[in-house]
Length: 81
Image (cartoon, rainbow, N blue to C red):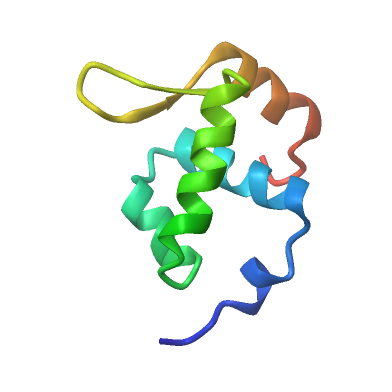
């Protein structure tokens, strides 16, 4: 599998923003894991962190969705939007 050097050079805050933005764009956890070269533990850790700070929740369809706090974060701090 080809390593994505961009993804692996991100700082922690950039990684958090990338995962949050990916969820905002409707990507599944599996799709995000693919972007991180199959590192499911890393992605799960960031998703759990996003849930703990109330930027992401799991809806009734077991899908990850961004909260209004998460959207506010993206609007203020994510330069890739």
